[in-house]
Image 1 (cartoon, rainbow, N blue to C red):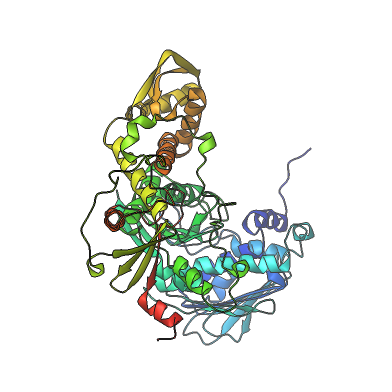
Image 2 (tube, one colour; image 1 turned 180 degrees about the vertical axis):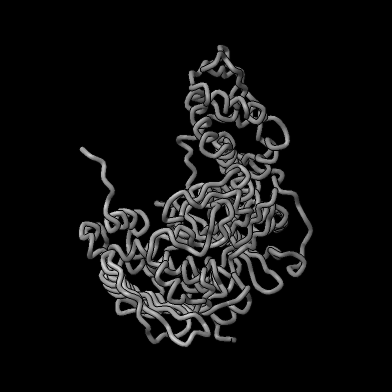
Length: 599
């Protein structure tokens, strides 16, 4: 079989298969071109989910006749010249327009500002027309019709028109967050008009347009820098979470990305505060030297590769945890709004917003005591709950004198209802505290500080366990041996392809050392960090805290309740328990007065 050169049209169709996967991919490429052209207003119109019509109109720099002729040819671009290590634009490959034109019917009309006339060119299934003068406003209009008509096999893999339209909406939202100074309008026969007015430098205002005003009240600002890499953005308080990851946005040098390293770091940062099955809401923006990140991993340009992934992961986790430590004990406003809605006429639990399921029968936050490791509870007697049969002679919480509400963020305790909820009066409202959830968090933080400040107690194995591993995994594990030793895991090299485990953390009880080492090795190979072991220790500490905390149904004296409130104010992350549930809900006086028609 002879080797031969493929026709240009077929080459473009093959390229289109990578660049243009669905209508949303075409929309992304064309919006990026508009932004690179300096547009301050971009209008997107769709029909049939983008399959029948996709029109992008911008007021950018436009193209003259010569530029228009090159724009529809592959690998023609104004954005790079000879190097790929200094990319400062969204597009740079010069593939979008010819790829779309090879599988659809495309018309491009453009006019530079100051030019007397515009010009138009059409590309139909890869065939390029002559360039003709055309009336046009300054800027560019790209109209795509009958997408994938030239490759009908691709049409079979597209989803419904509604699903494709939703995917385009998501692309526009991501672009809108990345570029708050640009006005976006999304319209068409298959949707209601959606408009995002420009907000200039006020990024939080633009984020609120996308995620809702509720996010503004529950967002913590991020601003961190490490070794030339800066992280800005906003992260939601842990109790403001969602049922999927669709409300997590990441940007690298202004480019929207779907990067697994960033998403993994985000999950790790919230690991101890957001319950399993729930997802934090966050907008993260990384800025770094373009030479330190490769955006040419895939033609779609949604994946990136960092030169130092460990630095990026550490920066994200550290910045978010520091922010949560600083402000994360804030209660989500969602809890208060749900409470207020329950007082309104016509309220039914069936119609309440499904923020979280807190009913005992199906709660995902109940401690998994059946599978918890065996723990030496004698070491934590000072935190344990007194026996119900014993008469308690002293409180596990320090006593304090009567307090005034205006002196403290969580106010002064006024009552305990149903032997579980503390009602406290603040200067401008009231706070309702779940005593067990709150004390559980306090005990957990105390336990975690205890093993963070000193080496975790370990148990020596009578006979060291030899774990056979590939040599490269052994090298990775030994690079972290000192870190593991601090956490009670003592390992030694045992030949070129084996590791000897001599001690394991006592908190973990009987441990599958081989399985643990393999998991750690895989994690280091992927992220250059090993968080599995610390996560297991945190899990055990959380289980201990749950069993050693003030129980629901126990009556507390006023000084005990106030002591609990003061400890919460002094403990980072006390706004949610170890299982991610809120520990308190705050109601402002204005909200209460509104319920009674007083305002």
